[in-house]
Image 1 (tube, helix red, strand yellow):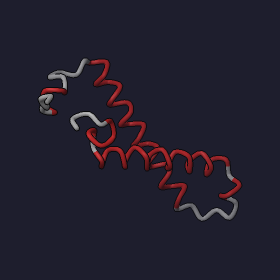
Image 2 (image 1 turned 90 degrees about the vertical axis):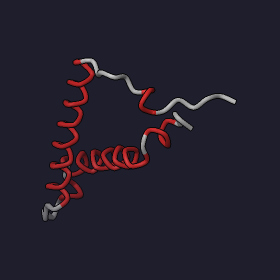
Image 3 (image 1 turned 90 degrees about the horizontal axis):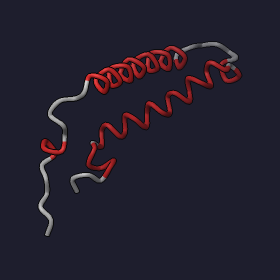
Image 4 (image 1 turned 30 degrees about the vertical axis):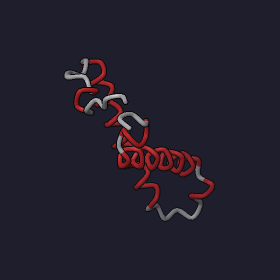
Length: 83
């Protein structure tokens, strides 16, 4: 039987500065995309279904939804690590 390694031991103690910067940029991107998607979603424009900005915002919303679902599941359910 293989011994299970606690999740805390699987995570590096320190994140390299480049990875921390990338994580911060991704977080900023997600926040900006979320704000855009919300503004577009509440837009009352009669032609929004034809609008290229609306279509892109809708694509972004689908991706954000997938990321949020993965976050809620946690790394164990998403990757199978730790099972």
